[in-house]
Amino acid sequence: QVQLVESGGGLVQAGDSLRLSCAASGDTFTRYTMGWIRQTPGKEREFVAAINRYGTSTYYTDSVKGRFTISRDNAKNTVYLQMNSLEPEDTAVYYCAADFSPSGALSIRVRDYDYWGQGTQVTVSS
Image (cartoon, rainbow, N blue to C red; front, side, top):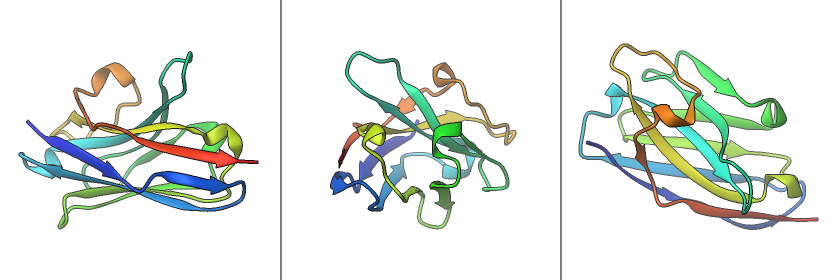
């Protein structure tokens, strides 16, 4: 199974940028579709972005399209989330998650992701 460790969160102002990183270990990274999922207190987890194993297919939730970019470096076993033009509504704990998908299929269902990092807090002030 894969282990995931996120980094890169912090406190920024509206309009700023952040890049989240998620380092994977413990299994062959290219067996996994990778996703970023966020959660705020009292709300359900929201699927933000996903990328299939070779980066040929991506998904973004509507609220981040044009502002966030998901990418992966398979040589470094790392997935990234570049977040630009941040808004206060983006404030959340961001989790990196992995879905075992050797076929390359890309899922956007939270329940399909079996492996999760510890989360990193992103706070955007207005």
